[in-house]
Image (tube, rainbow, N blue to C red; front, side):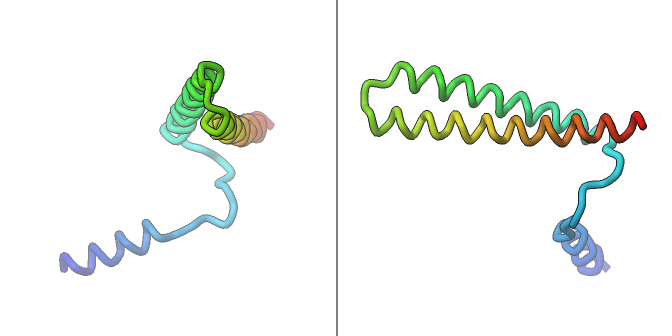
Length: 89
């Protein structure tokens, strides 16, 4: 019985959606907001440390980290904005 529950839980956790859902729950929206905050914070920190760094190789990597988190932030923002617009129509 326990193994059956574990197998069904594993199948559910391995399920990958091919498309985003048409509606996002309030809990999911809060999590997306948290992810945006984490990425914005990481962007700011990487930018700050890149400006403080005197070693060119490390400065370059920190700038790349900054750009990566900024792209993630923008991507999440696009998804949430599109989702909110979809719910209003």
